[in-house]
Length: 127
Image (cartoon, rainbow, N blue to C red; front, side):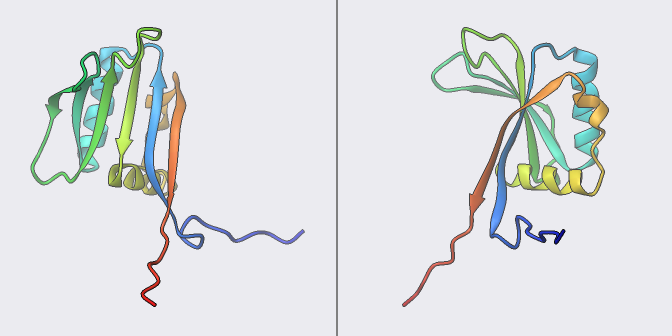
């Protein structure tokens, strides 16, 4: 059987958003996630979507860190859990770190992947 050598890169795809869903996220696990990703260059934020304009609070930040992890609550009135989101370039780094086996997956034992977005990079034809 011939193996396919397609990759996101070869197909001009980039990871654009990644999100985990926790029905319950204990504070001790949240702090371990914050610390683990801070060491990898991620600032962390609490996001409350209860209001029209979501409210954001810093958990742990450093001006040298260029990426972010978001702990999102009050997403809907039908579900009370927490989502952990990696938006934009942060999701691309998260994906790269997971390929390099630098993610402690034990921190996500009780999570489900809620969202995984890809973008197609289409070259502009200057004609």
